[in-house]
Length: 280
Image (cartoon, rainbow, N blue to C red):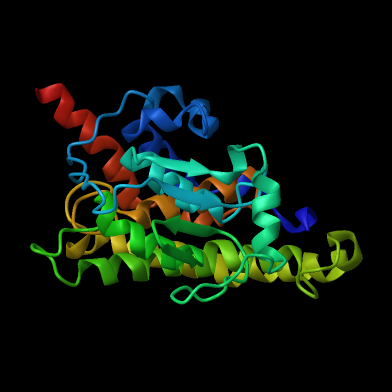
């Protein structure tokens, strides 16, 4: 697949977004050292304030069930919990975590009267609630962790945030995965390498610019608000999702197109905080 990629034309759009995000959230630096290649941006300060975090109405910790040792889609949920400073446990870091994941995958967990069976992780347990599917979990966590606009101030904001998260997952996660397994998800990459190379070339040429251009338009829109965030001028779980898929794309060295290099809105978001901090 990599023979089709031109590393001399890697775009700065994801680099800037990841760097901005990490500078706003230094607690993530120990887990995501991607931005340390750009030390001059490390000390950026953001003018926008983080959303107020809301305590859950349930007095029990969240429990994330996902494969140990694999960031995957569970990392989107994990980032939301970490950003909010939520009280949670993680099967990936428990002694019998793998057994717990397998018990759900192999349908060994007995059903109850309220919860439907889950098909695959990530899975979230919160009190008596048991749900799966990354976007569904984030939709549940968003208002409880302060990662969507307050319903009192923006009743429909949660659905706009969810739309952004779904778009990022569709175009910058699912389609990328399909490049690696274009024939069968259960087959090894080596067994479908030729088809994977063709799929990757088409994705980089036709699909990737479409999604990069979309998020550029989102950041330029009035609804984005002030600062580098995607919606409402504040951090939401859509920003966390976009950060994670950016990090994944960079780690996998999937090249961007020169035409989208240094997206102007992200460039402005990078310089404005420095200017504001110098005036103070």
